[in-house]
Image (cartoon, rainbow, N blue to C red; front, side, top):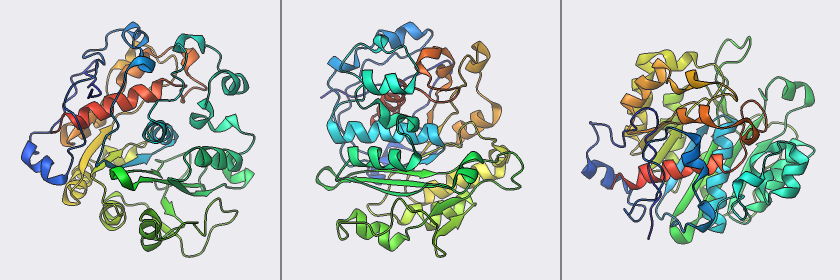
Length: 355
């Protein structure tokens, strides 16, 4: 079987931090498949290297025993959906034709010309609620979505009151993928925006282990009084994520293009990594992707991200996104496929290499 390859970008990507031995990682249960490498570029110095990849004709193994949690903003959400789509269908989104034929960023034309591209762009549907239903239906029966569409006024406020937690599970191969929405500071908010869940841990775990066939609360129109809320990274990891079942073995985190004031705190950086390690998970820090047309200065990693990368078990360095051309963006921040596929090829290779 093939394996997906590591991307060593502008800066060398380390797979294993010096504190984590191979034996320690194996005891976490991170053996997810073959160790043969995929042909992803070892060093990315030009977009042409990505352009030359033929993802459609490359058979990539579906990992087993992978229980991964993504925490972050909408770019991380779309990466999760791209991976869940691969786990579900055994192929990546938009690989039936050459990627270069998709050069129009109009959402309606994308929906017509690129099969299932709407999975990674919420405006492919007329409302957020319709998009929740569409993207969740595509992963039936293995994904459940604890999703709340805020009012129009709240939505204009960058989804402050919105909730989106997605739970994908394939019991046969012991695969699960979870996305939990977490945003940084925005505008005049005095604190980072909260982790929120309308489902408690007992309910989530019963649902994930097939004891509940039809979730009683999803696509809500108003929030319940007993919902879980937390703005503290370490207690969220310790008291919520680590208690999910199946137990996560990989934790991917980033707050995206929102402000990152909390991550500037070096003490907090260490506390987050320790909480992930204490929970028996591999820590993967995903660096922040670049705005469209950011230019070559986007190749330089911010100092706080370099610090977190040095602490984490795995650094998923996406600073190469400064080279992505504008026609693969749907707006200033979000991408068309195969960009999210490239994220996941890089991620899976790094995880395979932990064996």
